Length: 114
Image (tube, rainbow, N blue to C red; front, top):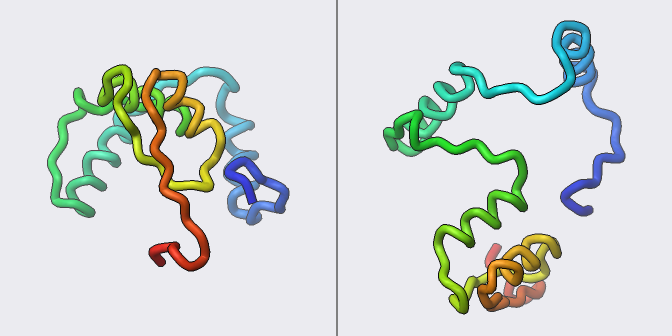
């Protein structure tokens, strides 16, 4: 199953929430609420005993863009990035597009760490 596979019927509770949202709000770009930021801050504290400030939080809408930003921020051209394979192809491509070198760690049923 790929990351984007969504061929299943969601729970009734989820469908109800989506319907309520559709009845009450606009479809378009929205901004993160204060409650969202506070929930992230509270979760980091309760789960990891880590205190963060709101101004350091950057919300990114998507895993692939987040990986791209991380590679840009943390590597220089020609640096190596270790990725486990098999991997979702856009994850590997984003490394290549940033002029970094992908170093693959191949997993098989015999070498899988779990």
